[in-house]
Length: 365
Image (cartoon, rainbow, N blue to C red):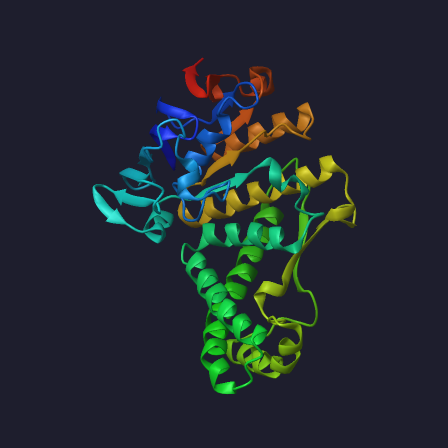
């Protein structure tokens, strides 16, 4: 079992103070739009590496009325032990982590707590720019390998330096060799982690009995093919220098990858599916991610499903709840009214969030 059994929010977003006592069941949170439901999910998302489900800076998470910084405290029930976790930020500084009273980094946090999410902003994943699909795949890869973010950041840092040289029309190859070696090492790690994540997803989908459609996935390049090794990527970068100088940016590497999906049973590209079908494909992938992690780690991740009923009919919502409960996952779900979670019955804890004068309150129902 992987679940938060206690969570306290202090001066976080619209919550001045909220104390939640939890028993490991899914958590259904309902309330009016703007009441502060998603703020709770964002708090839970910070128990995993990265910038959270809103990709916000630490300063933006502080409750503005006091501007004192913020703090999250959680008791995490993991398969092997219980952890006490503190996450906080003071005066807009980068967030800090403490596990069982000892300072820790985000990689250490990622090794004990896996969190996977689906939010409304992702509903347009299949029809918007490739950057969003890369970010979606990288979140999945990060759930399998907490070191993935480190490789991604290293690649992006080296690429920014190389792009600066290209824009300044620097032509001395000595300036490029070190950066291209760094890009090749980190870029190959990123690419291999993405491919491995896709393998995990495909296998989990193939082995599951699910009410949701199987998504066929492929990682492609905007042009050509992705070099398959560090050496090949380093050579490709060197060979592309003159073309990159003309463009003023790097045209080879994993930053040029795109995730292509299709509705397998219909043979239809995801981008051409209906809104409901696109949402069902995303739910299918999130569930596959959870199943694969459960097999690898001995427990499913925590699932964050914001406005989960959007674009899903009642039958599919009920099927989703059944699969979540079958997995034994602590899913944190939001919706505007309790009727959206009626099919869960007593299988979930129900919370109601209200808001008045910019202050959110959480009520156990």
